[in-house]
Length: 165
Ligand code: NI
Image 1: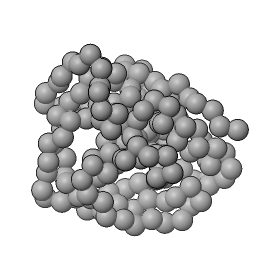
Image 2: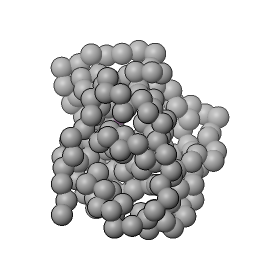
Image 3: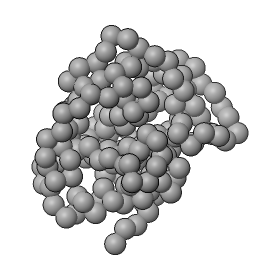
Image 4: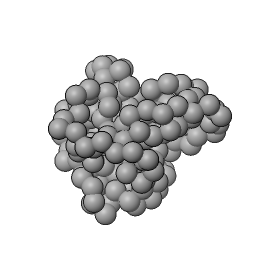
């Protein structure tokens, strides 16, 4: 049974906690990931990290194209390589509503993670997908976009849903 979870908002203390690795890949994890997918789409987000729903575990879900059916879940993700090339992009965050920030990040990353069944994943991604993963990884390290943004824009609403991570 899937359920939509409440997304914690800044300055909730759980958003600054460091997440711990997942060790057990069971039905509960699968249900949690499904809740995260559902919550992400309901909130018009393209990414969600477990701490945003109050769970300090290394779990993230992404859907860079915001298309149902293309969502991915990454458990215990570690970046193994970052490109030297960086790009500035505008990011928003479901936990910091009403704000966007310009953040410079590596354009491409290689990472290792596990899927919801515990299988190892090794991938290289670039562009917006790489940005989303890096944003969600920040959440797992207790970092919010307001912690390393150089510029802030207070907007009425975030028009483009793909800016909300
Ligand atoms: Ni976020």
